[in-house]
Length: 140
Ligand code: 5GP
Image 1 (cartoon, rainbow, N blue to C red):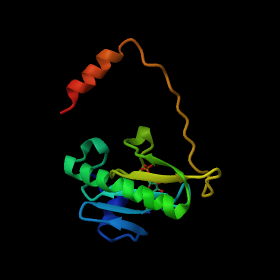
Image 2: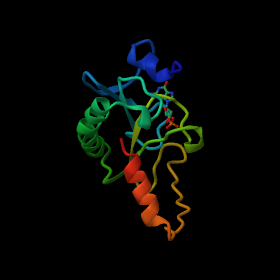
Image 3: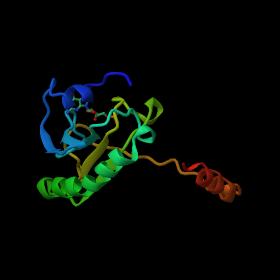
Image 4: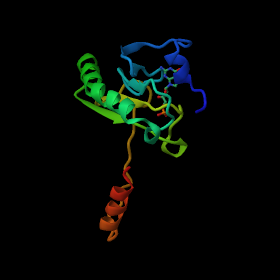
């Protein structure tokens, strides 16, 4: 896996505003927040995208994510938030080390232009059953 800015943060070579750390997970404030309290939660295991992450690292992230979300909500005063997780350049991933964005939402997000989410939703077609079956069969 290529070197990333988050690997440097993990090694302490670049500073961050840390909000949580354990043996497997680090969380810190995003340097370009979409709203006040925007926090990044990353595994210490080096994996570029979520599909490459081990079960153990994923479990460690999952165990702590809700606790971090609660803390971000409490301190920011928000009652709504997005958890965003980008994988691959086409999905707007810029840093190729797995990370979860915890983004509190307000009527007016405040920092920068905030987060705009537009869903260009389609409609599940006739192949839904076959598609679900194929994905189910591919789960290792
Ligand atoms: P992505 O688009 O990859 O999902 O998001 C990467 C995030 O990392 C961006 O929101 C960006 O602001 C944040 N980021 C990039 N470099 C740094 C850094 O050096 N420190 C911190 N704290 N955040 C960073």
